[in-house]
Image 1 (cartoon, rainbow, N blue to C red):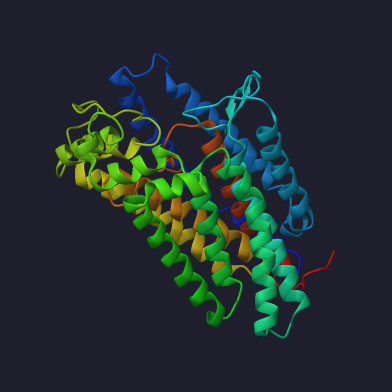
Image 2: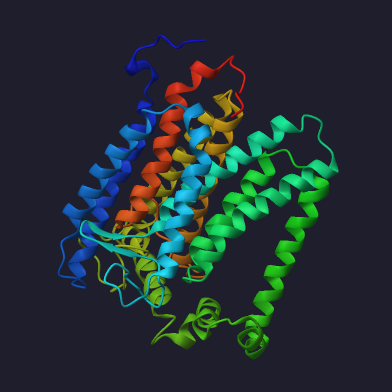
Length: 393
């Protein structure tokens, strides 16, 4: 069925308006954050530049139809893995590699520093959606055996990029990959007879690691190679005031900033609490202090509106591959929001995950715009595939 509607009718204006709201919020928050004097750089034009680049990315991504992405998925996934491998192989002494805070996660390029893992999240979603779609087309009759086969395929697809990201090391991004995987495992149709034990086992393993981090640090360092800074993040999360001069500083200042904003905040530029990295990972602390509970709630509500709208689009799609892609993107953005806001209010440990569309950062913003561009594409082209059968390669 061909879609004969005009561009204006097929374009998702609601989603575009939500992204515009995030642009305004981002520029306001960053312009206020940089007055703290942490950096001499003016991040406003840079963030605006990355938003323009992101808009171009959305426009480019919308050119291609879902079936084309389905066919290119493994090539895109492989290109992302190749970038991670190159970053792993290149020596830190090379000017092309930009280590930060002990993590070898960045390419230093003339246009700016690029983090391949931010793009790999979306590349991974494309590959995983293709894998699940192809598997379900091959095995029309689901059994425990076919579900175990699918789970094994998903595990192999996950472990390749995850291994490179963990060696950087980048725990926060690794958790994002796990969240994406968990979401797609659920929507892939795998029986709960398998999912429930796997998820309970994962939760139990996480609880065990947390207990060992508190009481068996030497064992984890000697046997599994954990670094002391990883334990420090756990300790500073549970008791930040005992580590107020180092690991707990970010969390304490974030809590003080958000708490001091009270109900209505101090107004634009009225910040009094110094929060390190307040234009990136801790941008929510700026919002909480200047606009209070009301302003922070509005920002969270806009994120809720985004997730709701993406979910609505996903439920409207008739193509299985498009549905899996959108589901993965929803999981990625939701986890980012929950983790970033959670770490600023001591609900979750600090992992260095930015707030989508608001925190300053070219790689993060372009990666998210790439993902949103795919949603635009799926919505723009989906009527073409409303009654079409999925084609095999």
